[in-house]
Image (tube, rainbow, N blue to C red; front, top):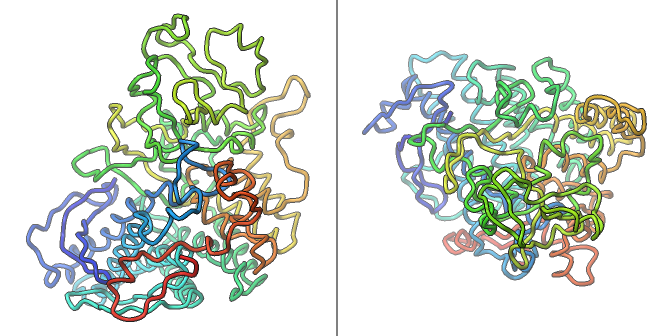
Length: 570
């Protein structure tokens, strides 16, 4: 569990940022070094350990950009269907002054500086264990690679800073070519793989599996790029993914729901999880807490019979799954659907609706898998929302009403306005490794292996038992037997990793044909399935290629002494 202890100011580019020295409760006790300064503390074994733990602190903020990671894609839109959100609609509201753009850029460089600081002090520790120090250096390099991967994929060419920022502020930066950023990422990850252990008793630390999984994704992503190595990169991606899968360190949980059900022992700390960001149940050391439980929810307080429900919680009203997402599931056979959402909303406050009385615990809203006819609806006391009605709500105009997410329900949230959850956030788990292997083999033309990895997940996803209608087991019904395409991979990612993957980046990565923007999945699928985006981009079947990058924050350009060009089109 994570704990914040303010330590010192660190400077990134031209920004002064207050950083918290943070450690994981699972592998450290709380300790406040009070008025210590870097010299005389970070060069001691205990001080260096505290510095290393600081690398994990910034992850909480970095993974908490739900709109930035997901809006404007095929599976997510805004809660309000008349919203003019620039991240979702790719309009003039998405520009270099966008708050998410600024904050994401700044937080990533702040995190990079902590990693660079770690590498600097690793050479100055006296009396430490050399093996341990090498492992800590590898942790910092692996995390630095993670940060640079998302910087490069978000902004393209970015400054490559490999030394710590001190009191001597650098006022002029240049944009390093993206391909060179990738070279550094690969070097850092290979260095980390060579030194990191396969396992750790301190659950929450970076291990070899983290670096191998990330390097697989890096090669997979580079393989689609004009400067990439094509099939050589895809082969590397497949090999690394298979190394993780076959390592013996990780294994799929028997049931998908076991990863998310708080009633299951060790549901967060298990050997399917390669890496997660951790939180504390102690509010004093939980920072702002985890808000993941507030994503993908509509606001129940708009309904008097639900009110400010502790059970359903307070949504952040920032992001909602589109109707297309819910259509992706075989709801007869796939257990992931009801492990992800509730198909009914239960009355929390007794009262009446539309002249009908409801007691606490009654079904207020039901979301059938097959649409009810008007006559069937009329026979029910409760409200029936058919699959083609998710863009409308009986309670509030222009707002979506759809099955509430249960996947991220947080048992540590005690009240409606308690934003600070304490569940872990999964960053990498083995299910995604299988999907990356499948994708790499799709690009390599090996359908047999792609199908094997895809169906391994579908076998785990299937409900237990036999379908009484067909006489087939649910596992047999859920097996995929067609051609595995990139679209098939993306659909499976949506079912398996909804709310976990950063959807914008997964779509952006994939091209049917390298360099042909008309085959890029972000630029095409988003217009097919995001109805608000389609309406805003009238008549288009392919988004403008400029949207494959986000704008450089205007503040960075304005403060830089020297040329620092904006991304084209912004």
